Image (spheres, one colour):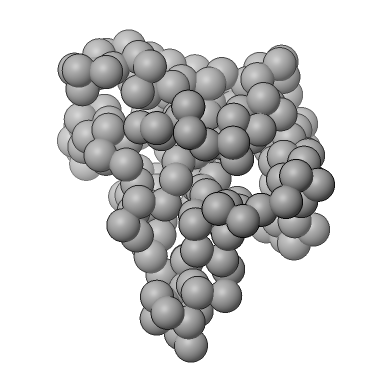
Amino acid sequence: MRKVLIIFAHPKFEHSDVNFQLINAVKDLENVTIRDLYELYPDFTINIQEEQEILFEHEVVIFQHPFYWYSCPPLLKQWIDLVLEFGWAYGPGGVYLKNKYLLNAITSGGSQEVYSHEGRNRFTLEEFLRPFEQTAYLCWMRYLPPFHIGGTHQIQVDELQRKARAYRELVLQLRDEKEISIPYLQKT
């Protein structure tokens, strides 16, 4: 059984029914740790050593966040900049994340359709997430396709419940499966 670390960053969590349901779906799972960055570091003063120690203990890392201006909220970006240090996460001696899994679990107001070459945003979600993929590559991690819930401003309750169950199933699969296969997200 792998240990899963969810690095959660939502500056307005109290206004996000979708992220609330996602967190609720996984908060009781054994070997799953949730780190709410805005709760832990409201002043943006990140305890780098503590975060690195927690990262080191987990085999799977999930960045769960809303899709803010085609990226992540500022505290998650700062966390990445500070915690994934040269000589620790990458570069000479930077092997502490090697072979761990990384993926983004993101929510967006825009639907899946707007994240296409023909859509309003002109690029696919995967293209917008390339910096995360490159971060994983630089840190010798295995990057997995994102888990995405789009159209969050208009999502119906039954659809949200289905997506929350799919997220829970994903986390369980990442925790329990001997071999992680990429097509795990197709059923969402």
